[in-house]
Amino acid sequence: MANNYRINEFAKRIGRSPATVRRWEREGKIAAKRLPSGHRYFDESDVRAVMGAAPEKRETVVYCRVSSAGQKDDLASQVAAMELYCRSAAIPVDQWVQEVGGGMNFKRKRFLEIVDRIQRGEVAKLLVAHKDRLMRFGFDLFHHIAAENGCEVVVVNQESLSPQQEMVEDLMAIVHTFSCRLYGMRKYKSEIKSDFPEYKLVTPEESLQ
Image (tube, rainbow, N blue to C red; front, side, top):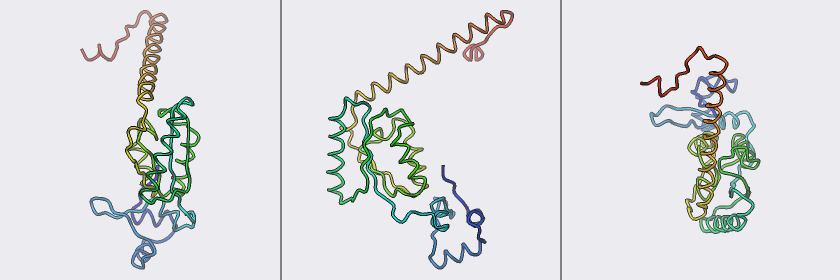
């Protein structure tokens, strides 16, 4: 995750004095961001810009996703709808990314490539049809990381492009995960009882009674 730097911290990060940073601000060479409190700060995108690591061109990317190969028609509809939106809004797109993978899978190859590019400051704008096309959970965290790296995330909010069947499958996956975890805890508890019969195990619920 990107860091926020106060002027002194930013100066140290780029190997300059605070006075130099303030002078650059006055000259308009750099511009500090501001918190709601009014305090100024810089982030990693500013570090890259000052140290010459910022990319020459920052791109606009559209990301479209479905969970399974059997949803090719849904993926095609999603892409077509996003193309129509971008044309209507006069948004030039540099890259179209299509991926097949579950919304709860954070190891999707193309998704991780976008995350890496955002952290390198290469993506100026990322567009998705709906939040869950990007990820089922954790969108607010992703949005924060993107913003800290100067990337705007645009959610078109076309809920019709979010297949309900996917939500059912994801919820079933959550239930399965917790069922396995509970089974493992019961099995582990039985093994402990067998190895240490003289000790009484107390569950979290019992400890509150």
